[in-house]
Image 1 (cartoon, rainbow, N blue to C red):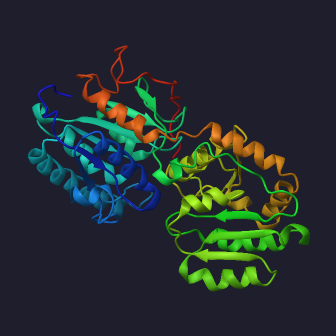
Image 2: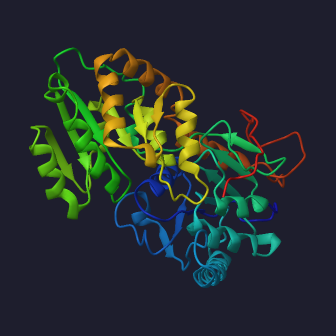
Image 3: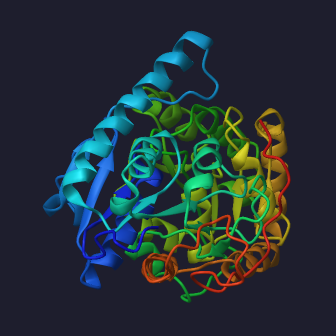
Length: 400
């Protein structure tokens, strides 16, 4: 960072996508605005302009861009050109905005704003802060890390970080309603009481859960099955099929493509079944809920498997890879969990031990400390760092 940069300029937050990809950005923006900072949003077409929340009254810029990982050569080239076009637009916008900092949350929507910031004249260049929400450094962040003044992580160990990278474990910012669940505790179902199961699968739901979970529950012993109540995120086109699958064995189920009040559902849940994205895992740990995690099998860096392994390693979750996620295997696991509920209580306690409900404030602390930190960057060999680094990050190569 050049000390002649505009330290009173807005903090540009670079984030895109939907659902869990955007919640951390909103949480940080709320924390920064509460401290008197101005914020601006640079995002992609999937997220579009925000008409509610903290960004509704902020300057917003929708930039071109597309992912390149996992695509064919032609699409990868087109995606790369779109990212470069977006970086050029971001640079032009920031020449006017004169931001004090740019904070990126990973994924291709972060590339144009952060690359555009790096292409500014040195006298106008803002500090650059990256947030990595997974236990494996994402491909976009792996590219951008060389430009970063600070790198925040959700996990104590992150594979794929470059040698010498300065990191601070802030945790993953979560929605305020989820953060409010921290410390409320967990009560396993008593014998004969209802068992509340929450099944979610990302912003659009996941068909594998619609295929597997109803059959697994139908195979449970009657004395367990008649106690189960399911709340499940289901794609709109699958709702009638899934409803029929639950009605046949007499299982109570609430089905919808989207649930607005996730915090209440999480509070009531005795067990959660879902994917292992960074935001989902953060919400599970903040709320202190046991889970069965089925990583998305096509994730570019297999980061969801690494996230699930981090929870499974401390006894907070059960990892089931999708090929092994069958009705028989899930039914056997659920029968064990619902028979000996002390297992769920122990997993909930382990999950809560990993939760960081103040992650948004800690990330805001890091942004402010980096603004005060002069020219030290993420690769600096200096002993000083914006905030004390809480743990050493593993430098293994990121898995493709």
